[in-house]
Length: 316
Figure (cartoon, rainbow, N blue to C red):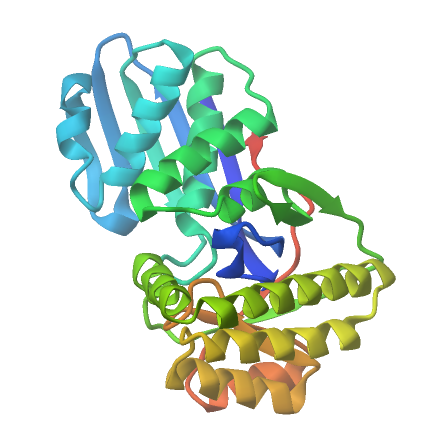
């Protein structure tokens, strides 16, 4: 038997960085997906194939999982295997193949997407039916080890799909009147979550009173965003995205490269903002063909995406 699973990438519409401190965030799953194939073996060997990170048919015994978790291109797979098998109380050799359409280090949740797909595929192949809450929790545990302190936004977004309001581990599915196209502009500069979260944490320590106001403002924007999405008011949503970007720039997670894309797209569309950890990575914008052209003109790579109604799922 072979089990195939996939999970979407994600973009944060409003509220990133504040989510680390328990604030709400609006996040959308997108139709770029990671695909995982898992086959149970009769021995205790793990066989990994993930060409995107130079892992090609790599074989090792289960006993080496802990040791190999320290290698950058094996950490996510090994951590996922260990977490799922420990949770299920099962130990088995596995053949695992990974392919992802979600760009890495971009702010689109590539590691969470792979982690959620791995959790579902491994557990199903071993004969277990985990619910979405269990999948999201395991993927969150994996993210915490890979990235340090994780807010849990990414694993829940890619597990549940659609647009969710996420706050302190709680998920609320947002009902959309329409599903807007999201235009993604990639700076092609890797986004470093640990670095960005660390910068913001230092700012919080230096200016605690300001930071409290920042968190309040971020929550208000998420409230507005949820309302406008429900009503289908995309223009108003764009305005709120513009304000949110201003807040994110104020706390130091923007960059010249991000600003170029934000301002170019803003002139031609409804609104735009950096997305994810910041410093590098991506912006998201609402608009039309003119927005794509504006992003490309200033050196950004354009990715068009739709909101994915489905989260993690089994594939045939």
